[in-house]
Length: 346
Ligand code: 1HN
Image (cartoon, rainbow, N blue to C red):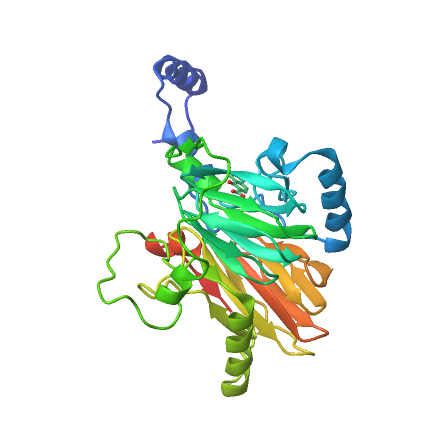
């Protein structure tokens, strides 16, 4: 038996494909090799958005449109390999949001979970289900799925933060809803720090029970996280790839603070030369302190405070620190781990 198809085989196959195609059926063997591949081959690319460029563009946007009119005045950080999709990685969204003194970003709620990492300015607040929190640079804040949230800036300086949302993940499941309440600004029914008092002290209310997969603590102030990193650096040897790295935790169950997004804070000592590392969770970084170089996929990017940069899935990267550096990062690791997909390689 010959393995070579008869001369008329190609035509017969084509006719067959056309016939089944009209009823929305297609042969797997024509697409299999593109569907199941040996390892991740993402379109996402490494990139760095320098603060020196982003800040003037944000301030320009501040003159062009109000937070009220925009609903959210955000410059979206689009991965150069995924333009037009509002994504920094294949699964996550990121943007830089500006709120000017006196402005309000009106209340809404949606299925997407959001994180905020404050980059610059003091005096703005975000409210989550009636609890207001004033934000300071380096603070990590969660807006859980389907919680009402609005932002405001009663202070006297512009405030900028990075948003990270699981937009593409929710879209994958076609599971999104959005609601806008009558009131633009939520009435504050709780005092600032209420959830902090309940959940940020290594204790839990004795009757605490929840069905939510999101942390009941939604404000992780920078000074505490920074202090923890500092203490860790005195207590244990530096990891050759990550420096000293902490993951933010849900105090209710020890897991990640959000069901779809993991967040981290790492400290690199001055002169650190990180080992090459890769993992399947594409990671977005925001520099809080220090300067150095981010190397990824054969490219090098000088980094400094407030820059955002991205390591795509399964691309090798490492960090070299010219100055002691503190870097925040986030990824879709909780989803990959829940699905037994996550891998890393040092
Ligand atoms: C959103 O609700 C906010 O509440 C920011 O600040 C960015 C991007 C996509 C969808 C919803 C916010 C967003 C967003």
